[in-house]
Image 1 (spheres, rainbow, N blue to C red):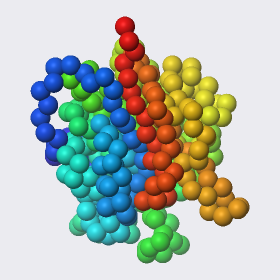
Image 2: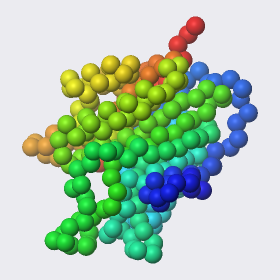
Image 3: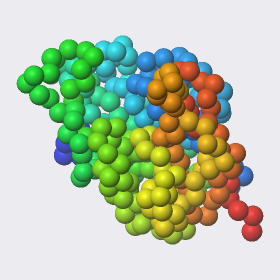
Length: 286
């Protein structure tokens, strides 16, 4: 199913594979995993890890759709089917060397949940690097990544037994400087400011920056967000030798009548060039 929009790039694809739930009360806690899955190149290993977490909500970046490198699969749908979860998928880029004019390939973000998902939409950032746009001097072959589109946040609401959680799935620009990435963060925070103050909000993803540094940390704190994996200083990407240490660039923040606990970086997982992060959401005791 595709949610209607004028442009194919701004359409959100969805699928429903979770069994119907008849619970009339919210669970005491929810498990959330955020992960850049590197297109799903190691799909079975990705699915195996995600299944082991028994997560209620998945927030995934670098998810392929109909790309040659991932066997033309709808990676979000494959994960949804195997884990019996509903999903929404937003296109970040059309991957020009991974598909064809008649059968285009895409790359984007997905939110999956064991509960109903509604009102999905994209924030296509107004500030972009344009690094990925086609150029006449760049060969139209792999490993070059010529693309159409731009960085996005995928937004969707998860209805957990009558309680609403709004999830923002970010993939900030990897090319360019932190000023550009912070501008993209501010677009998201401006959008979250329009949410009901009593609504539970999760902002997570591949930020491509250290959000504990002054400007980013101040922006999230001012907007009322809590770092969901604050106790961990573990890098979220593996090191590449002595000259390129691992970086902490994958983040999750929460706001509203919820608290985050048990934050963790799963640095034993080798199915991607990023490590998964996970945390538990709980409602405060009254």
